[in-house]
Length: 269
Image 1 (cartoon, rainbow, N blue to C red):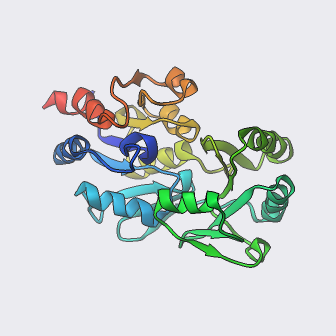
Image 2 (image 1 turned 120 degrees about the horizontal axis):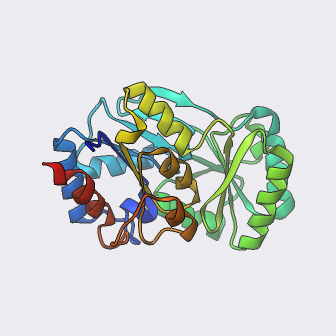
Image 3 (image 1 turned 180 degrees about the horizontal axis):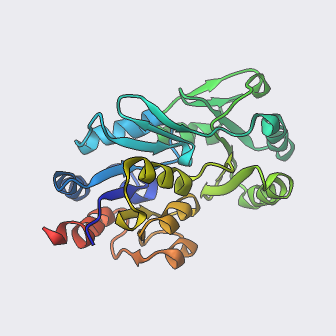
């Protein structure tokens, strides 16, 4: 099988635990790109954060695309948007109320980045991970649109209760999932990494059997299930390993992405 597209999650997949990209990963990605494999970053991060990583890979091309906000947005590197599915406006105030009810940090998102009502130790950690400062506002309800919502809290059981609560109320309108153990995210029902990947594949006339998707967490489930070759990095959650076609031997600190590229893409050359 000649794979035409390689789709990569960033955190805990392409990036190591120190948020760096290994030399082996960069070299393998550049070699795959030379063989005309389309490299697509697909992340929960905001667009600016993803673009900085693409530049580090040394493969930036104006005709390339990336998927941000966990599948709610697709842009090309010129800044043109081809897919945009924000949280439904009619329930956004109610989702803010739910966050306040449970006492968690609530993060809204616009095209510039993150919006919060206060900076806490949790939001500071998030800013450090994403390298994107948060915009602090008086009242989140002054915003009538958000690309996604992230509930940030240390108590996983509270977030699990919130997930059940939101699904019970709005399962027909939103997707609710964990991107990290302490990050519960809400997207439009019409948006996730799998939906966005399918949209981009159709846009580029690429069959799903010609796609490899690599990830580690619950938000990656959708794209791993969609791709012809769904790959779980070996540090992935067990539920993700179970649905993957292949589980790497190397983790995110051992250049697991390079392993995938060498095994499935460069072997044919």
